[in-house]
Length: 382
Image 1 (cartoon, rainbow, N blue to C red):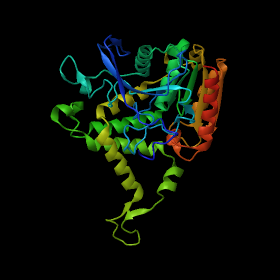
Image 2: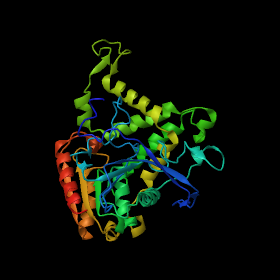
Image 3: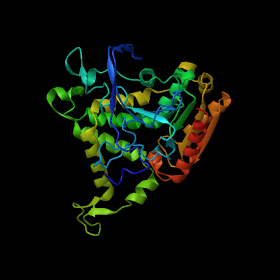
Image 4: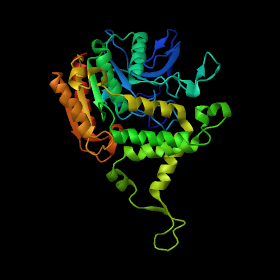
């Protein structure tokens, strides 16, 4: 067995599929007549069915949050640092559920799955998604699994937005809401980054208005550029400086002819873009970024976050990172201040970290310590 699959891992895991044949009414006014959700579970559901923890993924995440898919796999789940025996989300105690959202491209019903009414991939005809739609479908998955109330709903970035939405849509079905590196809504700068990324995809000649599967094409260049744009915003200046500086991969700046000069950071971004374009769907990327853009927790409450959070019944844990300029600590403090004003129980931690927005995925000791401490409190009350 791979030495990476050790005692602090959940080990070998396999995706499961839940099929729903009842229509799901969507925020956009359309409905899905039927749909599938791909998910993984880690740990065991207790007899009281009270120890369930739902993991909501971020923009490019999926159901594979922890463990490995085979004994020879070198790639663990995207949140393997936080889920497993003795880790912050301790599978010795919790039953953890992680799913691929509707509209995703890793097995759940989405643009790259077959539209039953046409027999062809949905492509650009797949309905637009909102976080409310995801939460509604996640509640259906909870029903399917026999979980009436989550011990905690947890998410980072876009996942944290879903967790907050859970606290308002189903206040009686969540006891703790963990919101990591998120915001009440996107800033104008974040909206701009997402639009540039979408334009990179949509301007690719192989995009065909989103119908690229009909032409047996993939808008790989546009999707790679979108990933490169996003990746730059997920890292801090310090993180990029420490990782690459101005190191060269080839050529020399000492000569007048710099035609052969290539910086290490250029090579890195191209690699990231190439990898991403090979395993992610362009229509899904567009769908997810639109859902992120349109998220506004306060919209239904006269733009008043205090009024919104008065509908919540759970306790909250909010985490931010000092160098995260995509979802800065200021945005997290807005959440915390609104919760305090709404008289909701809330704990807050701002973590000193050089990794930028991606810090929520990293094994930063202080982050893991405070996360573990809070989840221990959750375990004591389930």
